Image (cartoon, rainbow over all chains, first blue to last red; front, top):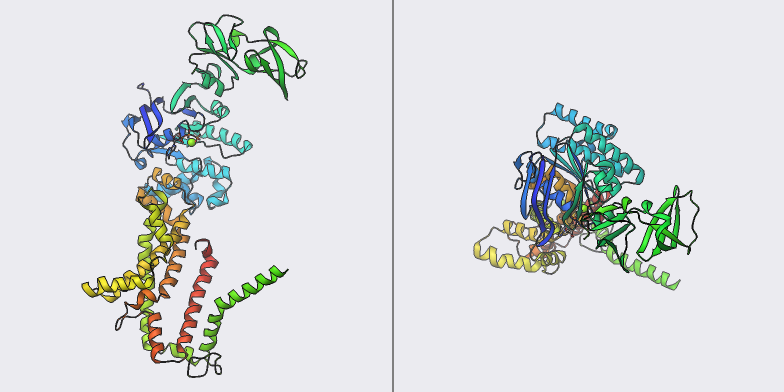
Amino acid sequence: MSDTSFLSLEQLTLAYDDNIAVRNLDLGIKRGELVALLGPSGCGKTTTMRSIAGLLTPKSGVIRLDGADITRVPANKRAVGLVFQSYALFPHLSVFENVAFGLRLKKVAKHELEKRVENGLKSVGLSKFAARKPAELSGGQQQRVALARSMVMEPKVLLLDEPLSNLDARLRLEMRTELQRVQKESGITMIFVTHDQVEALALADRIVVMRDGLIEQIGTPEDIYNKPASAFVADFVGFENVFALEAGQLKTPHGLINLSGSAPAGIAGLAWRPNTVKLDQGPYQGTVLGTSFAGRTREYLLDTPLGPIKAEVDAGFPGHELGTSLNFNLPVEDAAPLARFA
Amino acid sequence: MTSRLLSTIILTIVMLFLIGPFLIIVAASLSAGDTLAFPPQGLSFKWVLKVFEIESFRASFVMSMMLAILGTLAALVIGIPVSYALARYKVPFGETVRTIVSAPIIVPGIIVGLALLRYLVIPLGFNIGLALFMAHTALVLPYAVRVVSASMVNLRSDIEEAAVLLGCSRLGAFLRVVLPSIRGGILAAFILGFVTSFNQVPVSLFLSGPGVRTLPIDMLAYLETTYDPSVAALSALLAFMSIGIVFLAERFLGFSRYV
Ligand SMILES: Nc1ncnc2c1ncn2[C@@H]1O[C@H](COP(=O)(O)OP(=O)(O)OP(=O)(O)O)[C@@H](O)[C@H]1O
Ligand SMILES: [Mg+2]
């Protein structure tokens, strides 16, 4: 990995007994960066986080933090914080004592401890709840206690495993902003896990897309959103019409079909978002299989020789009835070129 | 309608069998007569008061108390780590251990008592008190494991991991986070173990010698020579003590959740 990495994972292989969950992972993270691990269920996100935290010993590979090899350093000596998806608050302790837990173990002097806990609670807006027990808090509040509990330890890296997944939609948005603010204010390097691409795009400085224990792509939200490297990533970030290329032609279930332009050289596939599909023009023909109104836009599902195609047009356009046949185009210049297809 | 009537009758009979003897004992202990009899002859508290004057009862009460407290504590000291290991790790023969533990009746107490007498006390000259202590520990252990295990079912491993990441050692996490979280279960196990040990006859039967007797054994012995209502009075007092303990436990701990 590059020398500028604050945290680096080098050729990391992680396994449960003989079942390999993550294979030869290479990842470098800069100081102060907010990185999202994005991927479907079971792809190894939690496993990766647990190994960084020291709760899972790698089968092979090296983890380096702030210049030191911490691969064999025990979890309680790593200065890595982890906010669990389930919060994992101590049920028998008050909110204050939950947040103070780590500081007490560090034997921080009483006065300083109180100050740090109070600041921690204040930064997540829970000063008034210091005396409550975790069971007397809402999910979002518990989440924030868990965040404060890790933050007051001033870890070198803070890991968050699906920090927002247990919250309802409104709270989720609120916490998203909150998390971003806390991260920018504290400057703590953070990695968070999510399988929600919107969340990853909105929050992260950089996104790591994982699949089956391997990294599919690493990039900025713009990169991932606009230039997916593979069909898998394209599909994950909302390109619903994804095709492999063969001999400069689209590979479809019904054989090879000519492109309405010429593809750039050396790519494996092309992907179109529904809103880049043009209706009522172009060389292809399709029948409307389904249509749904989505406020400002209208979505169509077309049955075509290329297979099912999803299109999205401005709702202002005149609509098409079910069963009508119409022309459409997949403009090559609007497509995302895919470097890999598999 | 008839099935309703039938179930009421059956319920009444069951309650009668369960509570009847207790009521008879209480009534007998309040007798004014000189022999253990039901229905009681007259009404008086003299036998209840006499219980407190019988020297051997006092000694054996202390013995039983000590055994119940120390035996149960020892059973918890062994039982808590066992429950924890069974809940957390894939222990070899874990299932077997669990089965044995959840069926404490498999080995009748009398056999435990006889075995300890035959193989420890007689050949090795083991102190009777020590043998009794071991017997009671063994007797209570299954209850301890069962009740503590029940309280661990909902204990998630992530709170221990959270403690470790905040700087605890594994042992520290166990002491600071696991133990406090299951303290209700531990108290419930203690109470159940205490009551079981205190009322235990068969295990103690072979292991009582001169000067070393548990209260129930002492009561049996007393009854052999003296057939007066003081034994009934003592039984009633003990029953009230047990009921009181269980009542308080239920009140403050929700005891029945664990048993
Ligand atoms: N304790 C375990 N024992 C054995 N296999 C495990 C264990 N935990 C996870 N795995 C396996 O390792 C792989 C990666 O799991 P992991 O929990 O890292 O996925 P994830 O990306 O966090 O998924 P999710 O989004 O569902 O949380 C999966 O195939 C899973 O079945
Ligand atoms: Mg996970």
